[in-house]
Length: 400
Image (cartoon, rainbow, N blue to C red; front, side):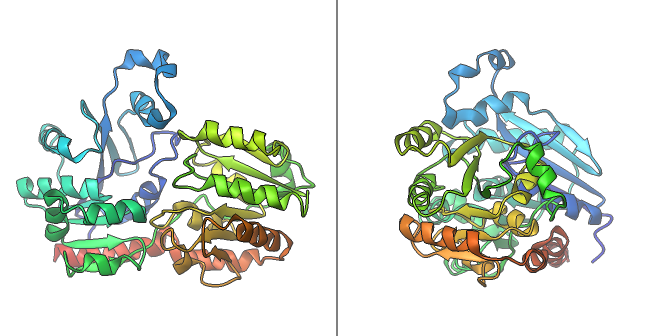
């Protein structure tokens, strides 16, 4: 079906701000950028908490776990290409189901007031799927849901017997899950199921002159670089066991540095543990980085490590491979073992609690000669263009 005269509405509570200062939601934007080439127009609605503007001078009152509240002060609507991004500010915490009524009512009113026209809704995350279901009830427009949640949140949501979640799953024209292993759990809600993986931005690719890049970033040129890009959440992203692994590795070799990019409520715990173990020369915290800066850090790295407890299928996995960098992930987290299908691309940790095994895998990886071209070629399976083709096939089927 030709979609060039059709209009798409995307709903996601994650989408980067103009200029890309906020890394959150880049996986949604990467898909939207490619998909927009096949639609007449794309509108993106982002439910966002309202915080009074005068509080921007009082950043200190926001705990690290609520940094997104502070950032919401600066989120403004913007347009690019044929995409318009709408941050619909709410007076209520937007991730809580009990507050859904005022949220979806406000979004419906926003659509009406701004005369946003659309033929199809693509919701990212179950929360957005619930809103899409309500919009469908009002405007009679079909919707699909990409279920991006990490496995813990996914299991908790579908086992909650929440009527809003069940209704959203059953009424969707299609359910898309970012890994294959969770499709079985969705069969009881909807027969239209498919696995479509995450993708990476087009600015993720192998870069030349890595020595120049290292000098620009003031990274030691004689050290092997290990990278972790994730929010500082030790219960979820498992940075604490990564630190323990580095503590073991330093007794084997001293030719490496681990850089952590991110932010989060457990930053102080991570800093204290690094100091306690005397690892200041081996682990550096860089804080958050712009979207376009992350691939540069990936390119100067020798290895990417993400030993998470819970993931859906992390975007950084695909970004790392797209830059030609090998990846170490964990088996129980999500669908990482569905992507790292060969030792040519990286390794999968069987138990994220086994930091001794993690240290071994990192040590082996730092000595191994990796084929950047082969890793990059594998990543092309999950390029924006190829993932877009899968989504377009679903759209066409739904709109028939």
